Image (cartoon, rainbow over the protein chains, first blue to last red):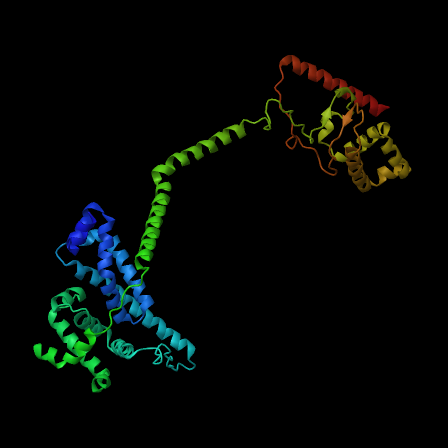
Length: 194
Length: 224
C-alpha cells in the first residue's frame, strides 16, 4: 500500500487525499515539498526560523483547503502559490515591524544602521561566505524581482509555471527576471572579478 | 531571450550552485502537533456551538420559566399572607363613641353652637372622673380663672385630651374623646362623618320621644 502511494504523482496523491482522506498521501506530499519550499522561502525571507514557520503554515493551509485544489493546475504550482503568498505577507510584516522599531530607538527620527553580527569570517568556509554574500545581495533586490529570480534561477521553474504562481503574464515575468538579474549582477560584481 | 540567458550565464550558475536549504529534522513532528491542536480547537468550537444551539436552549429555557411560575404560585399561596376574612376590622380613631345617649348633656339642637360651650362641659365631665384632671385643675386653683381665660382654656383642653390619649385606658362610662376637639370652630352637619339612616315611622317616634326627654332634662338642669 505504502509503496504504491510513493509511486504516485503529486496530483494522484492529492486526489487520494481528497477522495479517501488517506493521511499517508498527505505525509508523502509533505516529504516531497518540505525542502524545496524551505529553500524557496528562505532565499526570499533570509531568516530560517521565519521560513520554517511559513512552510509549516503552508502545509497546514494545504491540509485545511485540500478540497479547494482542482486538477486543472499542477500541484507544485498550487502549493508554491500558497507558500509565495504567505512568504510575501511575512516579509511585509517583518519590514513594517523593523521600520517601526528603528524609529523607536532613534532620537529626532534619525535612522540607525543595525550592526550585523551574523557574518563571522572566522567560522564560515569560503563557499559559506559566498552564499552569505549572495543571500545578502538577493535581499537587497526588490521583492517583486527577487521572487521571480529565485523561482527561475534557484528552483529552475519554467516561465509558464512562474506566471501561474505569481499570477502575472509571461512577458511581465521575463521582464522582472531580467531586471532582477541586472540588479543582482551589479551587487555581486566583486565576486565575479575574483 | 536566449541572449539574456547568456548575458547572465555566470550569475545563473552562481545562483544554481547555492547550497540547498533543508527543512529542520523535527519539521513533520511539529506539523503534526500543530494540525492536532487545530483539530482539537475546531472540535471544541463545535461542541460549544452545539451546546449553545437554539434547539438545545429551548427546553432549558422552558424549564426555567416553569420553575419561576411554580415559585410565584407557591409564594402567593403561602400562609404568611393575611387572609382578609380573618383580619380584625380597623377602628377609626377619629370617631366619637357614645355608649349611652342619656348621659349626654348636650342638647342635639345646640350641637351647631360654638364649640367653646362644648369645651367647658367636657372639662367639667372629665373633672369628676380622671385623677389627672383633678390635679391639673388644682394647679389652676379655681374655676373662675378657667372661665375668664377662654384662649388659655382652649390650649389646656387640647393638651389635656392629648394626655389622656397617651395614658392607659380608663373606664369611661359617658363620653370618650380620642382626639382633641377643635376650639373656636362651629360644628356643622356637613363636616361630620356620620351614617345617614332613614328610620321607619316607629323609629322616628322613638327618636322624637328621646329628643323630648333630652330637652326636658336639659331644661331641668338649666333651671337648677
